[in-house]
Image (cartoon, rainbow over all chains, first blue to last red; front, side, top):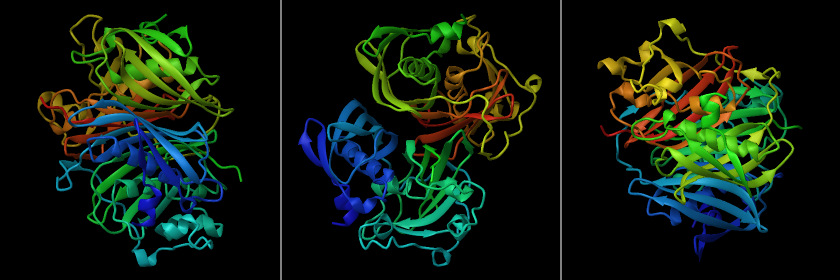
Length: 261
Length: 261
């Protein structure tokens, strides 16, 4: 199994409870990545559901998650033919760390869209993008997630922020086929879009909702992040993910706090 | 008190429980409006919180709500200086009808945005828009909510759908000052955006998340609905609300099912 598969595995304990072991390889100095936690929550919801895909996941981030054991509690709230709904909580040390509302459904990989809006925004070719190593061997997020960043959205790294909330990258997971759980990680994998406005430091996510819209094709995923409003220390970050077949496969929005360096 | 104020009032029962009386005047033939339910949920969350505003509300719609008594259960999950988080459920007949994750915070009505993106899209003047009466006296949604629709987004009513998912209207509540709860209603007040693609019938919301971004100024609110993808019977609907001062005050996205006429 791949590292990401192992890192998001959940083992049933009965009565809608599951255990997981949170891998520090999907964290940064400050905290475990939120998208990784969302992938673990979604894995538990799908395990407990008759349906195959987490079509809607809304999450409140209550506390910082730590590497190591965690428990998932899945409460089934309604099970229907088209969709099933549950409340899912990730617990550590007897305290809720992330609360989620998850709706599962079964998407048809072969269905053609009835209507689709804009095409994916232009991105430089993968070979014209920038990558980064964590310098931590296999222990850092950048070592376990392949991302190639659009240089036009990364000027802030060199002291030249673009002045707009934005971040764009190609994304794939080493040795792991694209699926719902890879998408869950990808919607929260970009650096906070306010860094490109000159903000510094970690920007804690308060709430993140994402929708899985299609079964992703293999290959690189294009991950486009933007924002609409930064005010009173709050900002929104929208992420759209397009697969190698040019299809919109995921949409997310998060509300987060601007970091204080 | 105004009808909307009465209709969304919650009375404490102790232990984080509240009672409400759902007003059929905010419903359609098929069901009570989802945004109205979100307003009632948010009212309970704010009552239980030290903060003034529901900055983030994510909801799963489990069952159709009926007019009449309902109970709200608020579980406080984390209370901080900047934000407080709760799980809130609307219950009828001992069954959960709507599950929500609500984050409250206190927005400063006088703060100037740090950064703001596009200006509000162009809308025809209120007097150049179309309005509709329910024909039901005071019993219908259209009689208790003032909406003036952009004719360019309403061609479907005359058998000429625009072919794009869209809906736009001016919105205000008779005798009720704009606030967080009016915004909660407004984010789900438009006709489903897929009607402008020729779809028919009620389009049940599965999940809706909205973020309150600013304290709205008095006057008409401009409510802009759009969508990105319709596929496999699922569609997304994004709503942005702009106040009379030209500020983005609310953002929402919902995932819903295309109606079957």
